[in-house]
Length: 307
Ligand SMILES: [Zn+2]
Image 1 (cartoon, protein in one colour):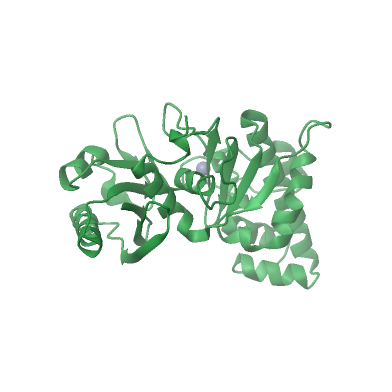
Image 2: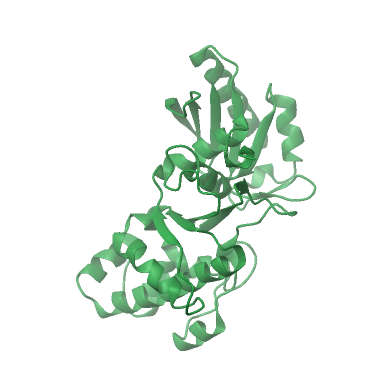
């Protein structure tokens, strides 16, 4: 059996998979994000319960919304209690087995290029999550691109292009990562709402923007045009650096057909004239992709081990 754990800022999910990556069981707990000891207890109990439920001693992979720095500290705005620890070493002392640990967006691309994923078997892919934030990860030559510092794939924290900022008169907003005017602040779900308001709309959620857009509202159209240009440009930068054949879109915004369908042209407008934009596909495993990717990394049977 293979266990995946997806640690979120509010909920932590564990899922049990068989060798064919069928999910046999899954459950969730609230994440004690402010209490490190309670967090460790929760993880330990989840793994013990998984062993009990399936009468096995499964492999384990953990996905986190953050990055591990060179010293093994987790940098994650939503999990402040874990910051002081050397995370991997602390977990090793409590979890009764070897395990893999990876950023949750990197887990997403591992899952979506794995069996049954939206880009199954693809050797060159980029996974872009557009939800409350904009995370990502790349599979290059069949391997998860890890990089030296653990943050390869953080496309959401590339800066807003000056030309678009000027043309649309966009404010330079602070980002949760500590930088200013990161693309995430404009292209993730809350960013789309910000753009809508910037152009005079009144939405509180991406869904409300969508309704206004469907109704033909001018502010919603302008927000959509600006959003597509920023998103297309950001992904065009990713393409110029990594040359993926497929871009897999996940997260809440991926549910909007119009957005996914408009992306190839929006990316193409910011690529070299004769270069064909990569295929854009929607995540096939949806919200389950992160936990499944973590389990795949833990099992050592993911895209990173195809060589
Ligand atoms: Zn940022």
